[in-house]
Image 1 (cartoon, rainbow, N blue to C red):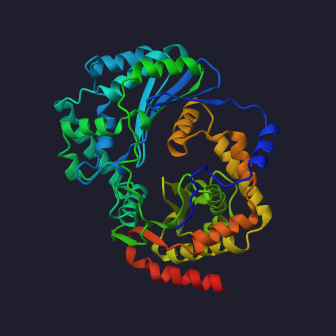
Image 2 (cartoon, rainbow, N blue to C red; image 1 turned 30 degrees about the vertical axis):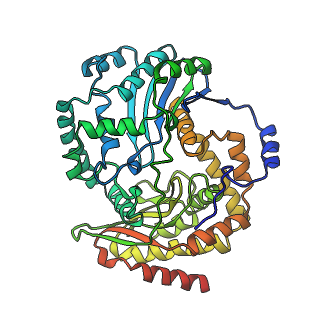
Image 3 (cartoon, rainbow, N blue to C red; image 1 turned 180 degrees about the vertical axis):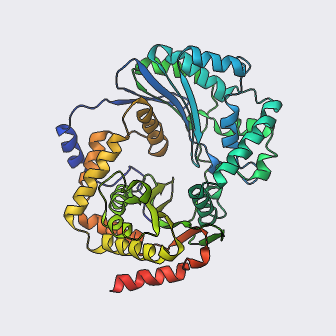
Length: 460
């Protein structure tokens, strides 16, 4: 659907970016070293006596199949159950004794394990991370115990309707591709995953070219490189190119009828763009212009957008949140909402009107405010060594490099009203609409009806 650039993140003027970078204040440099095996080490010395260090792996649920869906997340649970060198109790005591904190999470495209620790305990923390990633015991008794834990987690997720909506949305718009799989996997698969499945996933996906060791805080790059060589030097070579299966977006209507629910929970989307697509930042600005609203806490974290002001006057609209979700080759952009059934038509009409406005009549002043707000929010998210470390790891996995803040600022500043309108025309007005809703779904219009309304608004 969209053109992609093989040589960079966005097609922009490098001269303009260089000019903005020269005028910018000093920011810590992200230093990257790639070992001969392909294993990458990236650090940013932001000072202080503490640091966050993590391993970011280009492997998540989209690298699974129907027979092992849920394995990546299952491994996350097993990582803290002990290794041949460390019992579960020994691991917990060791982490507590050095004042560290371990955590992990799994997404559709990646898996992350990280430690927050004192700077002088970095070496020991990397030792722990490598041990639990590469040498987990995967004892059968622990596997059996974790089945119940994960099934209870699935039951909790089933009560979170936002999670349910996005899971069923992915299941159908990416049907036939591993990107459609849920992260936790189906219950019948969780009950059958065994030690062999877990070990095969590690052997196949935990490879040097798919892993990044990122660190931020009081860190020395050369020392972290030595730690990587010491603890990850024996990794098998390999990257994710052979296992990657491109996904194709398919416009769908998905309904989960739960008549006893007083509210409709849903998302209305069109296909977005990938992480590396030239239009990604423009869509992030558009997402900022769409905004969010939650009646339980007033307006969102930003000043209210026009859409938020309009919808807040309807007592049946509990909340809405615009989103722009990116993957390697595709994306989803749209609005998640919680509304009373009688208010759903009003919400859809106003969201469509805002899409048309973004593509045709949004003015320069509004775009400039959104650009400043977007940059501010992106920078506020980098407060502390942990979010900086996560940003480094995510960007190296997604983009292949860390985008310096001055360059990010330059790219946002260069977005014009004309560019934003053109991108929104192509995405919001020409893209095929999909919806996923849970509740009294008979009140929700069909995809054909929604697209018909969009055409009417475009022509008016």
